[in-house]
Amino acid sequence: MRKKIVAGNWKMNKNYAEASVLMFQLLEYKKNNPTNCEIFIAPPSIYLTTAKEIFADKEIGIYAQDMSEYPSGAYTGELSVEMYQSIEIDGSIIAHSERRLYHGETDSHANRKVKALLDAGLTPIYCNGETLEQRKNGQHFEVIKNQTQVALFTLSADEIKKVVIAYEPVWAIGTGETATPEQAQEIHAYIRSLIAEKYGKEVADEISILYGGSVKPDNAKEIFSKPDVDGGLIGGAALKLEDFSKIIEAFNP
Ligand code: PGA
Image (cartoon, rainbow, N blue to C red; front, top):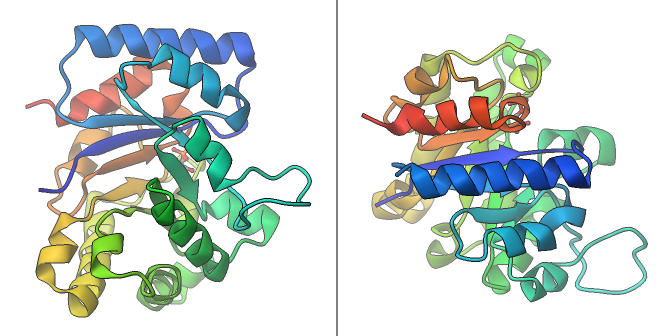
């Protein structure tokens, strides 16, 4: 059975004190509220060890926002999978559209990073999605197909089962504009069909596909109700417990 997941991508927000406060609030929340989904957070990497200490009982999954494709060496400013492994976090977001846009990340990079994480026993949350121009030109299926194939289709069936995919249309990220639940479902079902074609339906049915792009308390329930949407990767609304908890509760009956 695939997992239901609500993941918070904190991006480059919050100083240490603010980040700690939100982590303690989340811990308190998790202890007092049974949830019907798994909760992940991806704080800035500088706070990952703090997150590990605060969530010592693994109440929530701890993820990085990116990593180097190289194992170690002269790569100033980069962080390696071995470093993440050594502090025992759960995995990393890979190929977020902001990494693609501002740092020239491609699906070939993503492919190597995803493989490195899996080899280390960590979970990749691999992001893809089309730009506004690509959607307007009707290229979204083609773009998604190409991204998914390049980033993931060198993996074995056992490996790809461990990947979490996040469909994040670039035009919906941080813009307040959300894909309609129908648009999200259409692409999620398409991604699943691509995986089913290559690896078989059983493998495809095990993979959690999250939607990301302006998920808020007031639209989460409808988006998450779609059969191929297994949760969300949340940016802005993950920065306040009040909003993030309401999104988590979108999975409550
Ligand atoms: P947003 O970001 O929820 O602020 O649109 C989502 C993301 O970038 O993962």
